[in-house]
Amino acid sequence: MSLKSQKRMAAKLLKVGRNRVWIDPEEIDRVEASITKNELRKLMHDGVIRSKPKLGVSKDGHGKRTKGSGSRKGSKFPKKKLWIMKIRALRKRLRKLVSKRSITKPTYRKLFGMTKGGAFRNTGHLNEYIETNKLLRRK
Image (tube, rainbow, N blue to C red; front, top):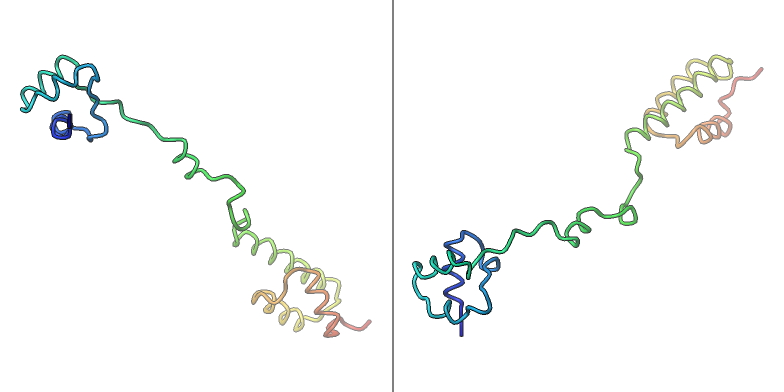
């Protein structure tokens, strides 16, 4: 009772895969007896052989594609935006120090270059560097 060749031929006629061919379980004897494509066409016309509907997206596949926030790695902020925010804060601090006349222009230029090179993590780190290297102007 092998319907392998009938299923294969029916799949070709229906232009679907073998898994999508449906054979009426009550009419298996008629399908087994048919050995030509014309006989299979007649069975298709009678509704004994049909193609199953196309399946949509499975829940498993959908879950794999749309992983939750728990599986995401790294910061949600783009690195460039973080850099822009950091560099603006550091430069603002340097401008403030120059306008208050706490540091000299040459010191400002040196620290500006260091800031651009990524020497400081944040303004606190910049202040710490200025204090440890005694770059503040004496009053």
